[in-house]
Amino acid sequence: MPAEVFITRQPLVNRQSKIIATRLRLSFPAGVDPMPAAAEGLGALADVWPQGEKSVFVSSGAPLSPELLNWEIPANATLEVHPFALTTGDGTLLGELKNRNSSLCLDFGEDAGEALASGLHFRFIGFDVDAYTPAQMAALVAKTQQVGIPVAFNADTPQEFQACMDAGVSAAAGWFFKNLTAPAGKTLNPSHAHIVRVLNLVRNNEDTGKIEAALKQDVALSYKLLRYINSVGFGLSCEIQSFKHAVTILGYEKLNKWLSLLLVTASKDPMAPALMHTALTRARLMEALGHGVVDKSEYDNLFITGAFSLLDHMLGVPMEQVLEAMHLPEPISEALLGRGGLYGPFLDIALACEDGDGTRLIQQAGLLGLSAAQINKAQLEALSFADKME
Image (cartoon, rainbow, N blue to C red):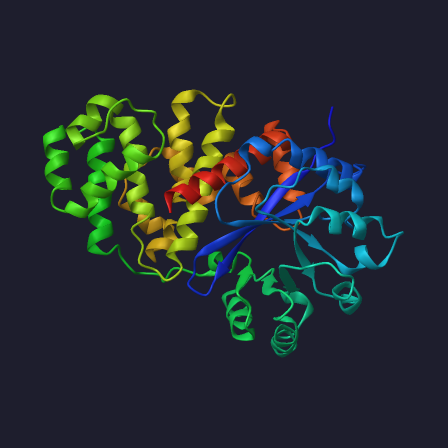
């Protein structure tokens, strides 16, 4: 049985609040030899590795060694390298990195000067938020920006993210945007409330004419729905031209799933792009992890649970108030309000994939009987799905 490596992630967010890259962080169960396991685990993900222009940073979670380079590194992958790995040992790692010519990020720290003088080209210079004051980071960014693109890691609060932007970095990795609290007492705005009404009509299997009439009150809504249906890979043999046509081809249950995306993507919050990407990643991840674990009739509800898991942040309304307006199945509400019910453990897994050290992910995987390979593959597939939906 192959040694397991568990992958958690951070989004790299720019000053326009858009996720421009992903940082994968590797964690290992006790007793596992990290770098050989990392090379094997990452190599097994070649067929689901995210494509496109976005960089994928890889933080090894252990001192980098030549064994990791047995992995055939994708063109859009960036290896994070700590100076310690370059300034100790017999020089094998340094030589291998020079030969590979892979994209590198220097994790700035002690002995950084020696690493910068090693002859390696660093595309990025990374600064850990926890290691520097804002003033120190600003000074280091100014000093090194000619060497590599400055990025920051572990920005966990809005204040830390803003400090990173003020220091001059191009993007900061972290989940700071999940730490915003929706104001109590606020209600859904009219456009969001209209989408909820349409969703409730579909969930109640109302007459197609009634639902079409509701959709026609917002032409942009109708257009967006048809665009989703025709672009997300249903493998349809024909293009869907109308809501009635969609009902005929897909049925109400599938339409409910894609109508849910309209609510997820309706936010005008400044952090909406990052929130939407995260919600869609959770949705696809939970759906994929449900395969073979729950009945197939539950797959779409797992997707909706993940998609709605950040609605309070996206709509600026407490989750309890959002759910009061919606006629959702009880297992979805139980998971969203208290991590309970049938879907709660799957949402816990999705949240654990956003943790820092991977400890909770390893524990949650054991509870559901899921392997690291299953979770890693589902997570990367979900990232690709969210990228396509942007």
